[in-house]
Amino acid sequence: MSGQRRAWGWATALRGGDTTPWQDWLDRADGDGSPFASTVPGAQQLGLLRRLNVAAAAEGRKVPEAIADRVLSASVSGRGRGDLPLIGEDTPDRFGLRPVDPDALPEDELIRVAAGLIADDVAATAAFPEPERSLVERAREVRRPWVKSFVIVGAQWRADAVRAGLVAQGHRPGGRRPTAYLLADDLGTVLAQAWTARAFDQGGPQWPDFLNGFASAGHLPPRADLPRMARSASHKYGADRVAVVLDSAALAAELGVRHLVQPPRLGAHAVDLVRRVGEPLGLLVAPDRRPHLLRTTLGERLDGLGGPDLTVPRRWETWLGTQAERTRHEIAAAGYPVLGDLDRLLPGPLAQSPVLPVDGEVLALALGLLLDPVVPPLKEAS
Image (cartoon, rainbow, N blue to C red; front, side, top):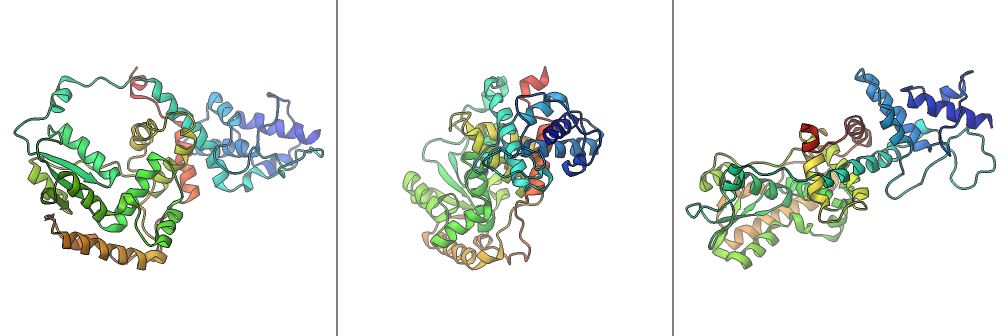
């Protein structure tokens, strides 16, 4: 039983903020401890808490015991292995999963635990009421008859932000016989926006798997198929009332506003963290609540974080170029008015080293959200 006493000693030390790796702890003469729970925490939970202690110490902080206990008692979310036993714990009669060194675990295993904890925090915000809109905000939501009739369509991640920004400036979409403005960009950017929207809505595959699935099928995902969006808008509003927007400043001038509000800028690692949190969150809240909760918590919290924007790897350069040329040709052939230059739809040469989510960077963001959990605005203001 000395191995178990050593495991309890390490777990107790981690609860107090220790950062000693497990293999080093095994060599300590004073490393034994007593149980404080029914079972020794799993290797993922212990490894995550040690990394959290390291992150806190780097900022001159200490992990509160309540947060440490949350980590140690957390479940492992998503597909994959369950709680893993510690190597050296000395449980010869154990069946099932092989013992592991927590510090040798892939970072993906630690992210799975962190994602479940962050999902719990995000789900908790659903119980708080939405802040009441001010009189000015309510007045802006009333459509003014002299405002140009319009609607905004396009990649959901960007279109939602533009619509909300226009309402905040007193320009509510709608009206009689509106013009449908289709927001467009270079196809690589539109694909990244499509994957980002999917991360907030339903999670889904990793960025390379997302691209590979559609590239193998030889077509674009519906969220990035601009000609399809244009046709849908023309059927609904009339072919003569669809305009393609490749110049945000030109659209702002046409609508009579100062600027178009853009969505939060989430780097590659931040979008991937949202994707991972969305999976366990889907088990805690209704599907129609998930996107809004993620946008108002992680979307706002991670704005400007997560490294550079996603890019498409060069292995899909031919597919991307072919789809971009098709997109440009179909939009030009349909004769839609264009604000900007249609050539902007075409991606430039792809970088030799693409920007992809990196587990270590995703974990670093997750550790920050464990140290400083998302808090509803009303609670924060109290």
